[in-house]
Amino acid sequence: MTDMEGAVLVRSHPRCLEHDPGLGHPETRRRLEVVLDALSSGGGGWLVDREAPLPPDGDTLGMLRWIHDGDYIERVRAASGRGHGFLDSEDCRVSRGTFDAAVAAAGLALQSALDLVNDRLERAFLVLRPPSHHAERSRARGYCFFNSVALAAEVVVSAWGEPVVIADFDAHHGNGTQNHFLDRPDVGYVSVHAFPSFPGTGTADEVGEGLAAGSVRNIPLAPGADDATFCSAFETALDEMASRLHPAAIVVSAGFNGHVTDPVGGLRLTEAGYRRLTAAVTATAQRWSRGRVLSILEGGFNLQALANCARIHVEELAAGEPEKAHA
Image (cartoon, rainbow, N blue to C red; front, side, top):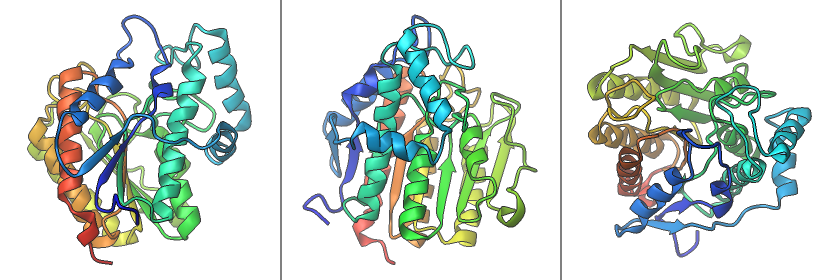
């Protein structure tokens, strides 16, 4: 480890600000700005890098072919080149900066996963956009273009040959992430989310396919679920999946759109709920994964709630003291 041993690394990059879906769209650059400002205003146990190193774009695009069809990657590039309109669904509006932002977001995930497997970091929170978990192999969806979460998990599994668990507490089900790993017994996917809600997937009978049966665990909750219901479901599902797979790392789809004030989530979580969710992640990582957590920002569209909850998330990641975790 480096002299940053034990610190949570908060990583972002200015290129992630370049995606501009237009007036009135909730997925704005201000989301990253308020999170980074909240995390830069004092506090111990984490280091903020607003211009974290990225791999060469060619390397990132090559690795993205693990996750997305090559033709689809070029469709994202072409749509961004047009500079207006949308790709695949009206919620995925594009600008001339969309492709660069999406590649940078994937690059942050790729570099951080490589740093994790090479023992250069133990925990990180990636403040990136566009978000990830709705992006499918050949389709943009739900504000998402490239699935950075799936890419990070693939890198870790491929490098170590050991299982990874993806823990998704975004208010909406991560259809793209689940579909990518649906038949993979080496990657567990846990999601607690509002249902029925966008994207309409994530029912309890979606459990994985073939040899991977049991490696997907969905807990769909009625809209309006509160801290007690949501957190209890997440804690139980994550513990059961980790006990099954003994993961080498936990990758988190950290969505904060379940907050009671969020305009799109439909849930009633509070700041205390997000602290409890993160504590469940760190406890699981301590038990099974030598404390290793790679957390990636997903939703969260009330700016004040997003800033507050993201800071709480990082505080709790730092409080887990990964350097003291046992093997």
